[in-house]
View 1 (cartoon, protein in one colour):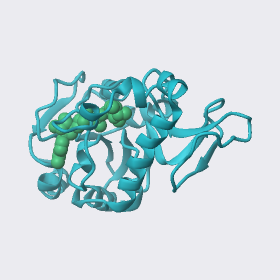
View 2 (cartoon, protein in one colour; view 1 turned 180 degrees about the vertical axis):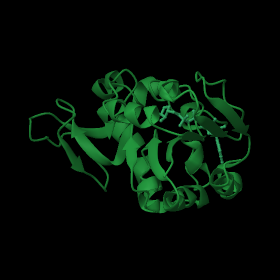
View 3 (cartoon, protein in one colour; view 1 turned 90 degrees about the vertical axis):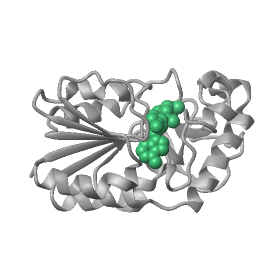
View 4 (cartoon, helix red, strand yellow; view 1 turned 90 degrees about the horizontal axis):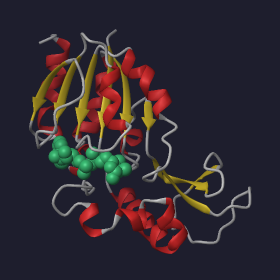
Length: 229
Ligand code: APR
């Protein structure tokens, strides 16, 4: 059974109604990264950070996986599929995908701001001041800019053994996620689904760009992968 690794970004959830980061009206047009997605922002104004993530979590609870998430689950019938996602919205889990690596954390868990390995589930609004077991304060379990991405160590071996890589809905601007394609075998194929043609990739593999919405082409793509086109 062929190994397929799928790298996803905010664009795969756009058709579920979740804003991306760098498109028009994206999250980074409305919020300053340094205020809501850095350790410095947390120290400066934890309530602002919690409000930002509470709002995103409340919205994520109201949306459903779209056709693209669901088709990736169906891909498992014919291929050994690993999802490596930059998303924190839990939609791949809700769609039932079996192998998911979340590079940037989850809106639905929290961690100690003293030791990020101390985690707990969260479904309602977080308030500042709740103490974690290690005496730190609970914070969103999200990888912020400038922080380590521990899950990248689990993602690299998946890329090294992939026969094909599908990249869906990411501007490929944030590392180390954007650098994962360098680990693909020379003879692997890359298919990039993005409404905009993303920047050239840093891979030696053969790249096919499909500049359409993820949900529009994923069905046709499955047929293509099955018939080795
Ligand atoms: N189908 C396919 N692609 C789409 C769709 C769609 N329906 N809608 C938008 N896109 C594409 C856009 O063209 C863009 O290239 O999705 C991409 C979204 O890019 P970003 O907004 O930069 O999101 P992402 O690449 O996931 O950001 C990576 O940056 O801010 C950090 O931690 C955050 O995980 C995030 C990381």
